[in-house]
Length: 382
Image 1 (cartoon, one colour):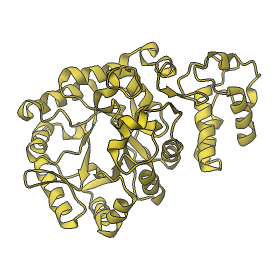
Image 2 (image 1 turned 120 degrees about the vertical axis):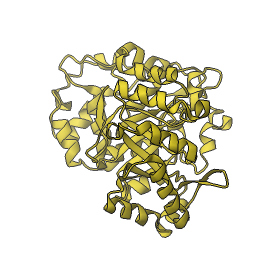
Image 3 (image 1 turned 45 degrees about the vertical axis):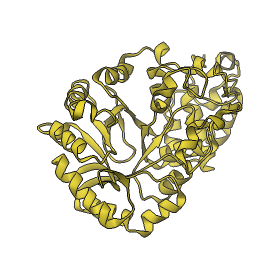
Image 4 (image 1 turned 60 degrees about the horizontal axis):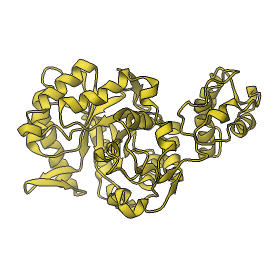
């Protein structure tokens, strides 16, 4: 298992984590086997957005004797009321829900306390006005949560939260179809047929800005909806008009700036094993470039996908990483110190480009790489 830093939290997390979708399978009896498999393969991170008390109790039982082996991302404001899940911004309900969660999980702390499901700017304001963020800060001060997070599908809301400095972790939906869509307060619109009725071109700029902002600010991204609820794995269901593999979906998410861990939804041991196979997959099995270039409904022309098809460079430039750092400076309209440091340790830089064009001939997306190298030299000075 490969481990990554979760932003600036100091936590090292497995790049493959677990979503909680399968914990209630077979009357909650699937929870134990999924945790057994996770422990065996070095998965140390999981998300728990569900508020079902039976599910949370099953997770608490599964953690007994191995709590220290797992990093828990569990959700504040996700409560169980009148026999069903509810997202709340009521402070009293939030506090009661948190106490119940801690009791059922049988733990004295949550590693990432995730403020649950904020997709509207007006809702972010409620989180501020209703004392939810203040409560999360109190919990952190008490040591009952170690880090504060927010889950969202809307890049406008996520950018607002990241820029506020209030959150350390962002749970965000990342896949190559969502990334084409503009911000919307209704998550259902991200998958609506009409959103893909005409050809789409390149990533939504706010989503790109969000990923680069998180990378620059040290806010770790934990990925949900990597497979689009499974639709991306089925040619008939995929909005792209073609199927991707599990490895391609995971690799796409993990190559976005700021991403630390993909929370793989699994309803069975077999499905979790499919995601874990990514760790031993070949570069060819992970490669999504050819599939993306052939999407019948989507064009990525001119957009660097960080796929590495441009390699090898005769002078040793890591084009993908260099382009990421260049894009970070464009997003910030400055050269952040951390980005300058990362650029400096590259083996070769924009100024080393000899302009041979071999990289551009191999790029499936027609990226003007030589122009980017000149831009990098101008921005970084070498």
